[in-house]
Image 1 (cartoon, helix red, strand yellow):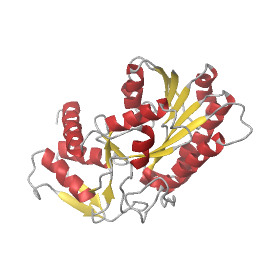
Image 2 (cartoon, rainbow, N blue to C red):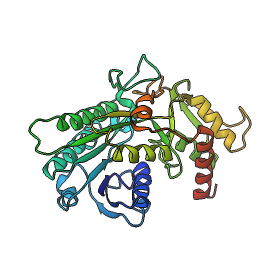
Image 3 (tube, one colour):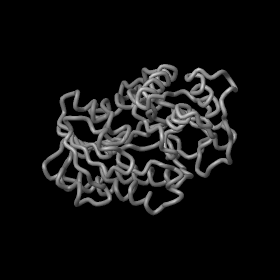
Image 4 (cartoon, rainbow, N blue to C red):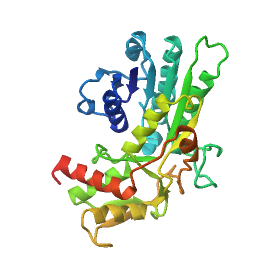
Length: 317
């Protein structure tokens, strides 16, 4: 297939691009390099520096013809969304609308959208299935959920003269090799590993008993590829998580232990809780398992060891 990956210079997008190339697809990447790095785009991909909030910059890729779009471009920080809510809205919601409109204009038959666990907000039902009402309570979560609804509402339009198959993948806390180790706004495990490599104190916001569902990048990429090639995925919304819950306190302890620090020996500090952070997070992945046949295969222990190894190798730490 001829596939466009928006945000393909970012952490998840670059891993997905590498896999799609390995599977024999022709892959085009657009990225504005606000979060991603040009150097992260795998050799063999056709790269164009462009921004989804400016549709005229990305339309030439659509005009040449596409079989599918994997839309990952976005503003990914909950905290930055509070600092600049209009910018967050423009990138995550307006940018997605631009991509959807280009898909319609150029009759692209397949769109996979990078949705988020933050769409749920604080749920009473944990593990959380896709049927749970979405009540996002962070600005970031609101823009991601709004964009998701635009994607699916467009696919249901009765006036479309082609079959437009869309899928949303609500990703939980993705981690793995290639994750930024020096960006304080994204990827809590990457932040912790970067601190450990540099010998800096780890800061936990709040009491640290808030939980997250950490899912390894390789399993996420498998989920995207499965959704892209499955006839059963069109029209669906799927959680992509591990189905396991880990507290931030435990995450910090595991990360420190991976560097050889004994329990309680590393400098871990606490700061006031930040707005918009979910308290209890754990994915119910039954739908992805039963409909798509997708199954996470990397344990947290395996994934952590590989992420630490990669981080040390990339920094010499």
